[in-house]
Length: 337
Image 1 (cartoon, rainbow, N blue to C red):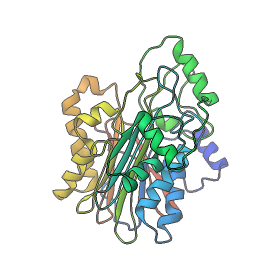
Image 2: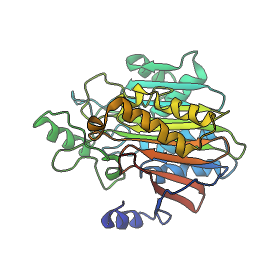
Image 3: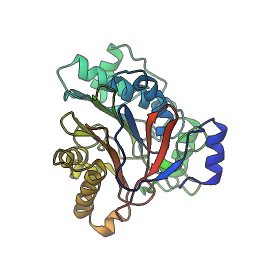
Image 4: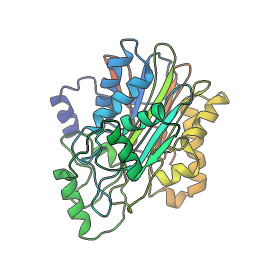
């Protein structure tokens, strides 16, 4: 749940539509509709709704929405995020449309909007994924400027704190406490976590699309890639069934092909919430209950009817839902354990 101080902070920023809902039962269908992960999704949804609300394309909406989060200069998604253990920020992103077209970038440095580079990969190359130096070369060739590699003040402080012990010790649900201009995603005790925003949408014509962008786990091993840029793991869209996106411990989401698994359950006729729960049960089975207690994962999904749902491994995951200019709110996902 959102605490009082954070509510006051949001209110001061003019987020009058922000509220939490307990997600009980099946959500009604909406077209258009946009969902995104964590509380950062409130602002991201606003940008997406500017497109969806005027009859625009879902693919344009999911790109525009997560660009808002990428542009935030703190310990969140984007170049202001926590670096890897060598002190370098590397970014991953992917995007997918209703026709199965998709693009992805990973291990990308010094580019402000990896989601837009991923879309260029989709639209201008015969490939699905570009990584590292090659992804950066492509981005520059497409007109994306190289940004200065300086850490943001929040990220620099977090990295300096981490260097005191250099321990890889993720803390669950830090995303929900770390987005926005007022709260870095590292506490004074040195706990930290990864950052991701995933977004899925259906437009007024019923077209589905999705996006996912991340800085990955803070202080990760250099070269580590999680689920977020992997089509089928962090994101999957199929117009005949639905769209799903994941957040949380990427290694475990990869192990069950999380987003694809959810979409396949929806293809079998499951409601999005039920499909997310079934996929989470599979993750729990693979991980085991004791190890699962140390991690977090969250899934959200929309089917091609415009019904939506989400599920969490543990308590603490929320997602943002927007289906009108004045209907942009956070939902507390049901936990499995």
